[in-house]
Amino acid sequence: MGPLKGLRVIELEGLGAAPFCGMLLADLGADVISVSRESSAADRSGQVSERGKRSIALNLKHADAVEAVLRLCARSDVLIEGFRPGVAERLGLGPEQCWSRNRALVYGRMTGWGQSGPLAAAPGHDINYIALSGVLNAIGPAGQRPVPPLNLVGDFGGGAMFLAFGVMCAVFEARLSGLGQIVDASMVEGSAALMHMMYALSARGLWTESRGTNLLDGGAHFYGTYETADAKFIAIGAIEPQFYRRLIELAGLNAEEFAPQMDRARWPALRERLATVIKGRTRDEWCALMEGSDACLSPVLSLREAPQHAHNVARGTFFESAGVTQPAPTPRFTRTRAGFPPPPRPLGSDTASVLKAVGYSDEEIRALRERGAIT
Image 1: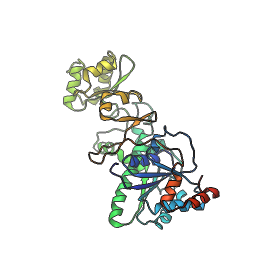
Image 2: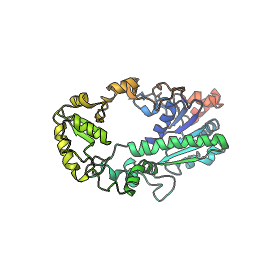
Image 3: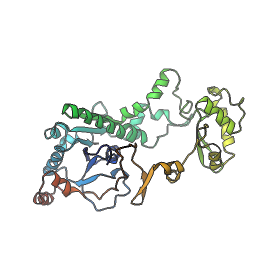
Image 4: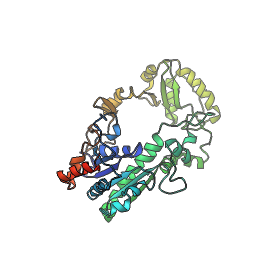
């Protein structure tokens, strides 16, 4: 099921971005084989990024285990890894070694800094990568320190999603040329690409370096969050003039006081005035008045609340699997629909079946276990 049915992907076990990339591909029908360092019977239902994948457990420091992965490469379309530069080569699983078995294999590499440059070998995390791309400096309240936007921008948006996009572009090209290539996905570069609008606005003099003073960073009183009477929050995004007018009307505000909308000098005072008005009603009262209207108001929902919202329920935005509520596969396709993926299987559950599929006999698999190649 799903538009990627028939695509086989090998995922060398990692953290964060690479497993999420594998999840995106598995959600849409790809056969993703996750290679872990050791087997375990522990329940993994809470590891959402591992859903829908097959799992094999190999000791990649053992030559026989490396040979098993290379045999898989011969029958696969993609390999993705998230090691520091050079690690896969030292294991014997670098691009050249894999291409010796399958020249059409697409080799996806996920790192924070990229495969080259002065920082390529340095450790780091999401916060470091988005600091270097200009993202982090732009996020946070006016006059206060930058605020990390969870690890959404570097790891997942700028990393995993760009890797998935790059891998599928390379698969498309490989089916024309018969040749695979390396996809070098850098979280610095991916997060920088996500900032394209802010760089464009800055070039036109429409974006300042001061956090919390711009149109989309909370500086504008008509684009931000407000606390309600019950200590909850609403989000307002009334940018267009007609939406702004509707917000002013429904909130019972003085139209003259709140005009002109784009007078930046008045934004702080108008935000304070709007905050006082919003604090006068509960979140549900404001939603009853404005949600779904041209005022562009929405409740700020918690992780527990979001799956219960009527719109998310109607769309099937979330589903429950093995007792774990989680986001459903996306995007949607009208013809090649992907179903809800099964929960993650215990590590190493599919080792024997996967190896048999590439030609290993039962005797050879037993020998691999005895020699420590299978963990």
